[in-house]
Length: 316
Length: 252
Ligand SMILES: [Fe+2]
Ligand SMILES: [Fe+2]
Ligand SMILES: [Fe+2]
Image 1 (cartoon, rainbow over the protein chains, first blue to last red):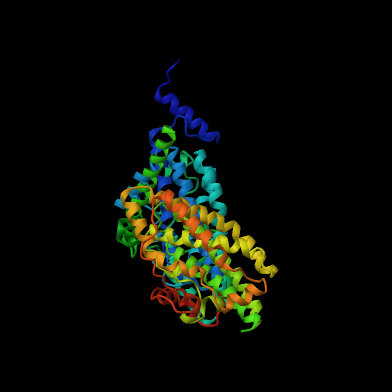
Image 2: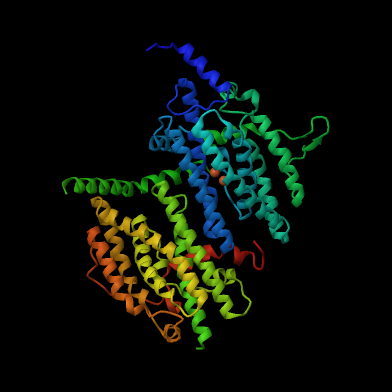
């Protein structure tokens, strides 16, 4: 057997990526590629799971049976996304429980948007519209990501996210065309979620250290700023359609670029939220940690029971 | 009481059971002991909310006053809800939630199996559709009762405590009054006293496997079917009804 040196392996690896051949779990891959992907996929999984909380917050107060059912189903979908993503990360050697412990200790990150509170029913519309909408912008390119299991998980996830986005927009447009109280409720919600939604795409390209390598590896296929611009261009039109005002006085169509110009993002706020100082960071992590701690006896019981059954089968 | 009134009340009772238990289960969403169970409990909640909608749609048709299902679900007073006391009991922990579900599922399965023969086609159709879901719920709750009962010392203690607390609400499952008499006579509803024994046997069988016991004190509570509830329901309703009360007469 000829042993290939690292450079040769790396060359072959990059050649595969350049030829759009998917990398599969048992293929050779550079350690940095594995690590980057593990971080990205587990962060994404954590975001799905933490993301259940702000919307879960309104299930018991949903205003109609239909809305209660739709919201339950949506939050359940997010749990499902978390499951596929943890499974995709497991193919790279990540252990789900220890990765969850990293989330609880603050070592692992998740999308900053879920650290904002849901204060009214309208937020259930806005989150679907903007947050699932931004997630789709981020994730559609990932359906072509170089790592096979991640790309395939993304195909499934994106289908459901676009369903969520439509449901969210339906709530928004219903409220925007509703009574004065409902209009006010949904405008207030947009005012609170607009800027945090723009921050979901991450720092400006000049300040995004991992981006260039990720683009070369086809783990990331469009830059943060490109995605953010695409999101703004689409969303502004949707807001106009239902008569809502985007809370940005600098927002205007730019004939020359063919895009909307927009105001300055408060990156200080973004950094503070990422570092744990957002309005709900502590509540979100506490809720997840409590779920795990309060459920420990259940998991132990399930394991103990499975062990007992195995022994019984062996002795019979 | 006219037949129409009796049948309306009869259906609303089942709808209220589904609604209140669905509401309780949905409190778990995002807080389950493992992700798979978070999904399972949410799934059961979702089925129960679906059953509520179907049952209430039938109820408002029978009543014929042009109400919609949300008026029924969200705009009654506490004493107008006629769910079983069992289903309004708080989640406490996963063990309580599972035991509550198990007692209910065994009862629901027996009742809805019989309701498939209702002389009212619409009710029979709802029963048949729901039964598929109920069988899955019962499988799920039975498996967990056994796992927790025969798991660790801690899980056994916890789940036995849940049984001891919730047992007093089980007799009410078989509560019958003039509403039932009327619908039974006409073949619209079912006589639950016929399968009380089957319920007990089923529970005992699962408990034996789970190494759990039925408590010695068997003093029973009832009142839910007549609108006299435990203290827990009021809080559940204030949360559930919040939007409809704060913003009356709006579409959502
Ligand atoms: Fe998702
Ligand atoms: Fe997502
Ligand atoms: Fe989603």
